[in-house]
Image (cartoon, rainbow, N blue to C red):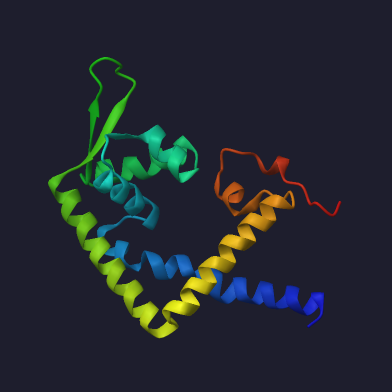
Length: 168
């Protein structure tokens, strides 16, 4: 296959497969009127051994504070999470799931796990592992070559003005 053919196949794959993985993953969140990203915030809160703040979540997810704030505001409006202000530093607000939030987080987790299990039965564990290894390897190589890498593209805090094509 020529480089042009590989490029064309890459674009075709993106347009018809990779773009829709997010849709596939987010189906369990739809009945609860939240995005998959908001669910991940809920899951982080549910599984954290220490109190979480917006800043901790933003740093761990490698996204901007405003991106997490948008998710948190939706979750607050839906009464899925609460905020508790630190008594010593009122700027710090700890996040916790409400009883409704706990039920929603568990329901989405169960549905997501079931959906993934069904996909894994069709796709196969070995192929899934190979695919994940390939994607991880591509991320590392892109970063090593000087591309901003997948993480950098996801992290809206860093301007893409810093992106450089290593061939130029």
